[in-house]
Amino acid sequence: MSAMTKKMNEDVLSFSRRHFMGRMTTGFTGVALAQLLGRELQAAASASSGWVPGAPQFRPKAKQVLQIFCPGAASHVDLWDYKPELFKRSGEAMPGPAEVSFQGKNGPLMRPPWDFVASGKSGKMISSLLPHMARHVDDMAFVHSMTSRTNTHGPGCVFMNSCFTREGFPSAGSWMSYALGSLNDNLPTFVSVQDVRGEPPNGKANWSNGFLPAQHQAVAMAAQQPLRNLARPGSVSEAEERATRGFLGRMNERHAEMHPGESELRARMSTYELAARMQMAAPEVSDLSREPAHVRKLYGVDDGNALKAAYAKNCLLSRRLLEKGVRYVSLYCSSRASGVDGLLNWDAHRTLKADYERHCPIFDEPTAALLTDLKQRGMLEDVLVIWNTEFGRMPTKQANTDGRDHNPDAFTAWMMGAGVKGGVSYGSTDEFGRKSVVDVATPYDFYATVMHLLGLDHEKVTFYNNGAERRLTDVHGHVIGQVIGG
Image 1 (cartoon, one colour):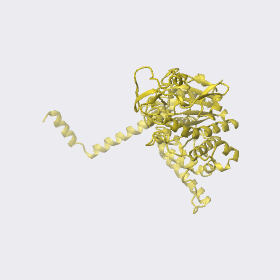
Image 2 (image 1 turned 180 degrees about the vertical axis):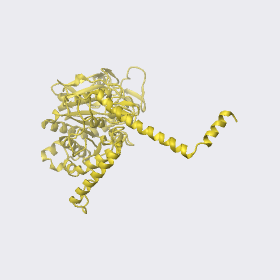
Image 3 (image 1 turned 90 degrees about the vertical axis):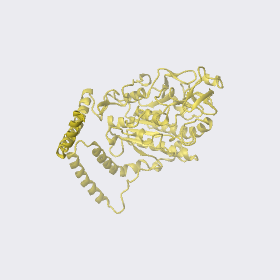
Image 4 (image 1 turned 30 degrees about the vertical axis):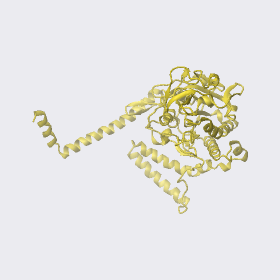
């Protein structure tokens, strides 16, 4: 036995319970110190940037955000990005070497199954599948040169919502909740409105608070799924409930004073307090029967297509949430992929024409009605509307199918409303829509622009986590000034 081995054995044998407890205490002290230093560093970072969480850094053009998200990679070349060469050369091989994308080989170029129509005073070319949305093009700013870092739906959705392909990072809505706070005391700051068909790919990661305090996670709700557990039991009187809440409030405050570093506890307390206030506010805001008949007709909430009617109700619910002061509303149109491509979302690998002739009528009229309603009520002076999908689709036919494969190198996003210059297009793809080539943009740039419109510098809104000053746009991003109005 070597001298070193002998010495190690002696150390192990001499390591008593007293030594163990002493060292464990020292370790816990280090953990507590790290927690305290983290808060100090966070406070110092906020002070050095001249920004305090809960307030904009400069005069904002927008106060609220409505995000409309179409999971499944809605095809830019079939909806928003008109490519005359794709029509002319449909059936030909795409120039260059044969490409292999997400599901395999690609066939020849394939034109959209529908024509594009010049719309609005700007003459913007939009798919004839979207006649109602086409009426709003003069208010929209299109970003036609978007790119993603992944060609897989789950990471793609999370990347478009959080600027990270991995789960565990805060979503954009959570960052806005943290950065700006609430506009009302009785409803959540951030609400995710779920499609009747289900959650998007990677589910709740799309509206997660990540490492931000837990109160910044979205509350999920929908017209078809009212918030649960809000009603007071019949056996409990209103006076009893009020007295109980008061007692619990005093107990919670005392406990919080004794444990100032437990943000999760604070978040849970504030969530329960919010739930108590929501007992009155949430049923009222979700009661669509309060809307007059002409508004219900505008949205199509009684349409014979059950999926369209359900989405229309969610559109109307979204307007009511914004009207009541919810800061950030994410509205989903379709859900995660199913066993049959394109059935539940925009993932049209095999039967593009049939899939989009099913999805577009669901999306088109209710979404356009929501935009019309916001505009008529003057709400677009404060509400920024953004439309997203996780990536685009190939201009070619997927081999041996009548659909398109995934394309992370080119897709379209758009925004309209508060602070946006309407009737403009930023960036462009190549002649077929295969790759973004002019003013190439990323989700980092897109959200840097969103934050700028909300009065926030995306480089200065940070949160100290795990040894780093984190931000929504990571270490990237620039404001797309060309889409911002005067």
